Length: 331
Image (spheres, helix red, strand yellow):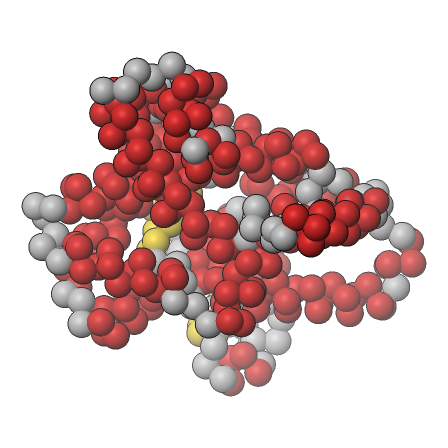
C-alpha cells in the first residue's frame, strides 16, 4: 500500500499483456490491491529479477539442502525480507546506471535463434539527454549501436553463445555455500595487505569468496567480457562515424561518467564488482588497439576463431602474451 500511495508502482491492464500467464504466480496474484494488478515501472533491475530465473532456478535445491531446520522459524521470514529489501535496493541503484542491455535467454521450449533480447532503460536515456543536451535521435541510435553490436557478436560467431552459457553454468555449479570459504576470503585479504593489492579488484566480493574453480572460470569470463565490451565500443565508434555526428561527444561524456564517481559510489561499485565491469570497457579497448597495431584485423579475428583463442583476464592486460600464445605475427 505504501508503494502504491507513494506513486512508485502503477496499475496495469493485464488484458493487454500477451504473455501475462508466463509471469511468476506471485506477480499474477498480488493481495490487497482491490482486484487490480500493480507493478513497478520497468527498469533493468526489475527485468533482471523477473526473467533471469533461467540462471538461478537450478540452484534452489542446493541451497535448500544446507538450510538449518531452525531457519523455517519466523526469524527466517524476517531475514528473507531483509535480504529481499537489500537486493531490491541494490538492483534499483544499479538500474540507474544502465542505458541498454543485450541478454541471452535460456528457454528450453524455444528455438535458440530466438533466445535473445535487446532492451533499453528509457528513464536513464531521457535523463542523460536532458542533462547534457544530447539530440535524442542521435543519442538513441548511438546507444542502440552498442547493444546491436553485442547481438552481432553472439549471432555471428557460431560457438560463442554456447561457450558463454557454459561458463555461466560452471559458475553456478560451483555455487556451494561452504562456510570454509570465509576463511579463504580472510586469507586473500591478508595476502592483499601483504602485497599492497586490493583483493576486490578482481571482481568484488563475489571474487573474494569464490572457490579456486570459480576464480578460474571468472578469469576466463573476465577475459571474454573485456574482449566483447572493448570490441563493442570500438565497433560502435566506427559504425557511428557516418551515422551519428555527435558520437565522439557522447563517448567522451559517458567515459567521464564511468570515471567520476563519488567515494561512496566507488566503494559500493568495488564491493559488488561493478567497478571491475566498468574497467572491462577501457581494458578491452586497449587490448583491441594493441592487437590491431600488431597484426591488423586478421590478428583480432583470431580471437573469434575458437574458444581456446579467447584471451584470459591477464592477457587482456598483456596483449603481447596473447599474441605470442596464438602465434600472431606482427604486421
